[in-house]
Image 1 (cartoon, rainbow, N blue to C red):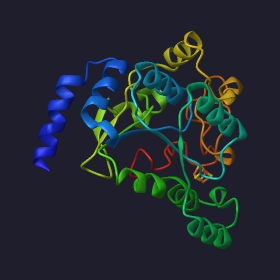
Image 2: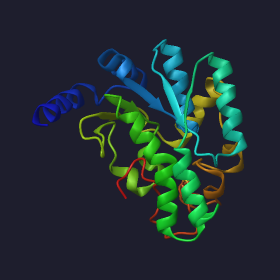
Image 3: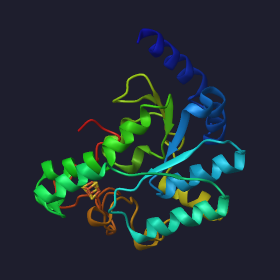
Image 4: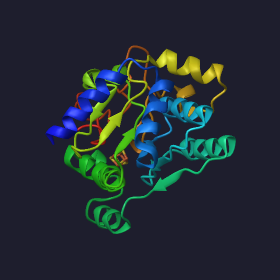
Length: 238
Ligand code: SF4
C-alpha cells in the first residue's frame, strides 16, 4: 500500500498540470489495456470520447445500462458508436438481483425511501461497476468539481475510494459546464438531447429531471430526497 501511494504521489506531481489531452495520452502510455473510460453519456463523457478518438488512443469505453435510462441516452450511444466507428461495452446489472429487488419492493421502489433508492443504485450501478473495476488498474471519468458541492474536493488524479489500489482520472475536473459545451459545439460532438431541455446531469429516467434557473446543477437528481443526497454511490461511499 505504501508503495502504491508513493507511486500515486509521483504520478500526481508529474501530471496534475497536464491539459486533458496530455493527461489522456499519459494515461494510455502508463496503463495500456488496463484503463477504460466509464461513460454515462453526459456532456463531459462525450468530450472525453472525442478527445480519445482524436488522439488515436485505443482506450475502451464502457457504460452501465441500468435498464431505466432515457431513450435519448440510448439514441446517443448508437450515434457515438456510428460516428467514431467504435465499440462500446454495455454492462448490465445481475438479472436475478434486479428481479428479486423489484418483486420484493416494487418497480418504483426508489421513491419510497432513501434506503430503497440506494439499494436500486447499488444493484443497477455500483455492483456492475465494481465488477468491471476488478479487472482494471485505472479508470477515467468525466467528473467536474462544480457539478455539486460534494465534488468540489475531487482531484484530477485520485486513488479509487473503494478499490484502494487502482487509480481514477478525472481529466475535466477543472472545466466549467460552459467550457464543456463550447468544446462540444466547436468540435461538432454528438451530445444527449436532454441537455437542450435543461438537464445538466443525466442519469436514469425516473430519477432525473431538468432544472429551473438558479437551481444547483444536481438539483434534478433524486429531487424528492434531502438536497444533500446528490450521489448514487459510483463516486462516493455514501
Ligand atoms: S438512479 Fe434511480 S433508477 Fe437509476 S439505479 Fe439509481 S435509484 Fe435506480
